[in-house]
Length: 267
Image 1 (cartoon, rainbow, N blue to C red):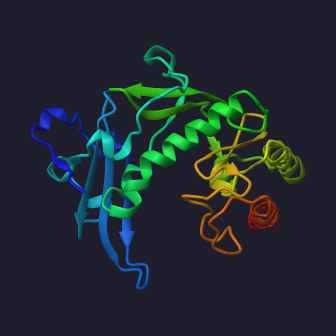
Image 2 (image 1 turned 90 degrees about the vertical axis):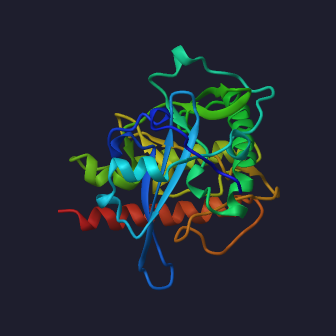
């Protein structure tokens, strides 16, 4: 993959690590040894940049490190062409969450080839669900389009993710009510012939009344369709490559067990 080097620091409006879109560390999956920090940045024109700093922990990165290592990703590598999907205007997107393609995998030749297709197919699913709305499924407003390409998906914004609910909110969670809402959302998907295929605590948000909202439809497909990605390690019984209702049913059982265990761990 060819990634263009940044030609001028002025293009990168970065003053601290807080300006980055993402920042993480990569470790050796066998030994756990630290390998590198990786980071991404998307500017106001939806131009995407990726950087990697071998041997430098993310807490030790300087602004100079970021500007030196960030390289522009060509639009066609990550953004699919816009065709028929609804569009959200710049003036209407300020209070929405903009889901970007997974640009952090830009150093993986195989994964990066799938990024535009995954974003495009998620937009198709969300457009369909927009015609069949449900209170326990994320509200989708349309695509962000720049230079003729889909650069993001505009979604309702929530402040709490189920994975961190016990850390972020002091009062107890009604597990039965939460699971009932998740099951209702999943049943709605199944009634439409769709399976989510990646249910886990990081893909469920909570509104101000603790109602669960199912997120992330990048692996949502009609029953029997091939999956480009599916499942999250620790939340699947086996590797799978086609969409199926049983994947969600298994994940629901794991979610409930996880919620109960998390609650018992809290004082």
